[in-house]
Image (cartoon, rainbow, N blue to C red):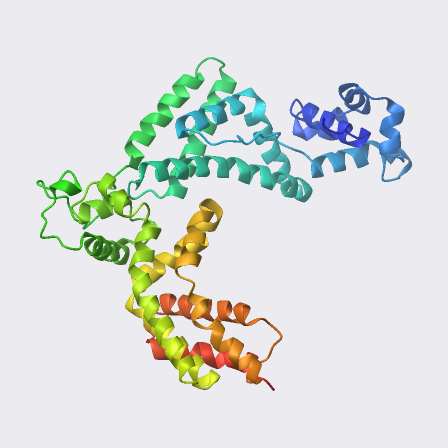
Length: 413
């Protein structure tokens, strides 16, 4: 059971409801105390208790204080769906909210926010939430289809178009009720999506087309293909290098590998699984050489320099896959947390540096203000980010720069 609203909250809610019926140019004189308390179901005395003082007496109180408070707390009363469903149904629900009063509040809110900083601050999260709801529904639909939007559109661009389309149709329905029912708005959205969403991204430039005689299943493949997984990894790396992690779909990879999407998913359920499979052997080499340095008791600073250089070489040799790994980590933590878990468990890059830093801290070579694992994470992240973003720099340049800055901060003084 929700807690009872305070008188102030009830007054503000009543004012927000009345605000949608007022001409903004006469807001101050039209929004009477009597109408607010009547809408809230409260008394005049309660109003004056909530907003003591009188503007008529030159005090900052009463109606003037209420109006200022109201504008700083005005709300669109937008309700974001709890569970995302099919894109068309989500947008139909969004349209119904618009035509049930949300569009009017959105327009009046925009008018208020245009010249009132408090209203802008209050309304910005709701405006963002409305846009984000459409964008999230679109991304979910693309994820389920395994496709993308047709060029030259982007996901953000298509989301903006959908919001503008629904706003415009809702405005027409508000002006002339019955002219644009929800079914007609849904049909317009479906028509736009039929063109804009491409399940196999067939319009990508310079893409590899699927051979006409491509096998329908793994069982029908030529048995001379001894290592199909390696073929998939090589195709994925080529596509990532040409188009980037986000633009490449499983359908693209399947086509380039002469597989069906279903068969590809049996081998690799996601792009992240391909990245992990590609990078794991290379990363195990970094770990193996680091363990050898430990057995040979290489000095911590020298061992750290050697391992950081190997990590930079590892990224440089696998730049496309490493870039995909970095993008997946930064993006998917909000959308697919399990993806982040998979990468961190299968490719724990800081683990190549943690034992060296621990040994250096025990010997007194490195400071102990931060834990070895925290330092290793910071160092590994900097190596990967610089290696990916500075393709013109070789591994030695990357490791020299990062270590010069890093060691200056952790050497024991």
